[in-house]
Amino acid sequence: MYKVLIVEDEDIIRKGIIFMMDWLKAECVVVGEASDGNEGLQKIAELQPDIVITDVKMPFKNGLQMLEESHEIYDYEAIVVSGYDEFSYAKKAISLDVTEYLLKPVDFDCLYRTLEKLKQKIRQKKAMFQYQEKKVHDLSETALDLTYRDKNKYTIKLLKCIQEKYGQKISIHGLSELYGISSVYLNMKFKQDMHYTFNDFLNRYRIMQAVKLLKQREKKVYEIAACTGFQDYKYFTFVFKKYVGCSPSRFLEMMSETDGA
Image 1 (cartoon, rainbow, N blue to C red):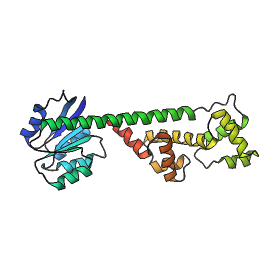
Image 2 (cartoon, rainbow, N blue to C red):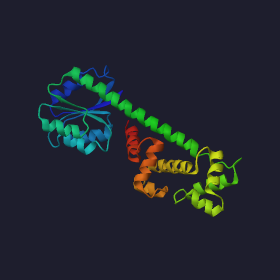
Image 3 (tube, rainbow, N blue to C red):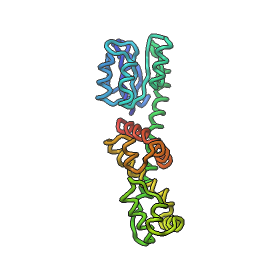
């Protein structure tokens, strides 16, 4: 069931939306109600709704201000209901990623259709995050193959270097000079054992470490980039997206969305 919060200052309209809709038919449950924007903010934080239906003009804080202050902190879909058919309201609502702008009196058939769109959007978000999680899992599976058994001695050296120095500048050419062996030979032996080139495996391992740090939520994204061996933030974002399928900031957003679900 999808959790719905109704924010409307007119009691008769708020109660009408709550009691005249067949919420079970819509696979939803109204978990709370609020009569102004300030109370709405409190309820959003407390109840973590999937969907917020709000009026625009309310005392203390209007509906758009409430959405603006909460939408980046709490993940939910929003429907704005208003008796004021003004483009400025609709334009502001669109900028806040509001799915639908409905006029009073509420057309319940239209509200049903809007809820269907919202539920589909929420399902897509969850499916996308599950897909990203699978990519992270697959990435970890390949990058965690750090056992040394049955591997060439140079592969073992390279693996140890990756484990110990992934946060530093490492290159196959620098290591070839260090070991006195050609970089072509080193890469060939490494790929025979690991099924990836040295650079590909190194990047996978670095991104795996970056994912761990992102999940801890203790460092800024640019700090994570630097401490996992990426001196260029744009390049870090490019590599992260290549292996995980989304940017680091979007990965954080999806974690928050899932936490709030």
